[in-house]
Length: 242
Picture 1 (cartoon, rainbow, N blue to C red):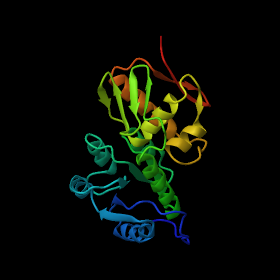
Picture 2 (tube, rainbow, N blue to C red):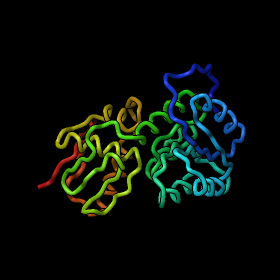
Picture 3 (tube, rainbow, N blue to C red):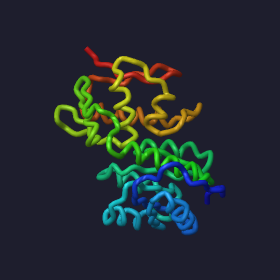
């Protein structure tokens, strides 16, 4: 369930977009569908992980809202299977205070999370932030090259030696922000606003987990340079190793 709140129409509406929610709470799906409709979002709901994966194969969805606590196939298992073939943005629904679920979701490729019960306006803001990032690039720079990697901003693809490195939208935005200022430490506040569309909150490990994912993927692709270095308590920088 989400926390009730009075709803004011937010600024300019987004483009029409199809969203899928996988959650066994039928009432939640119905309420969210009504809440998101004025902002031009079409929300379809599935009650199980198996049903949701099938719907994702058959439908042209732009974002997935995924509950971790599902009957049968868990949300984590859904996410692991999904990430083998799809980069669709994913917002995880987690139990409030359950840090383990949040970290697992981010490690397996979720773009963001929100804890139940939640304010639907906050969910709407996160949906808009993610879709804004995954839409047409706002930057005039169409590609960024540093060391062995190249980021194509328009297609949102990363390659090393011509081989594609699969990143989620959030991971791409983090790497892109670091690549735009090579050798400079970018603080977590900037990274959070760029990649998550929200302020950085102390003790939130989301940025650290996403950066860890990017490091792992670059290493798996054999990328030695550039490397992502951390400055404890401040942020991260992208360095070209000699």
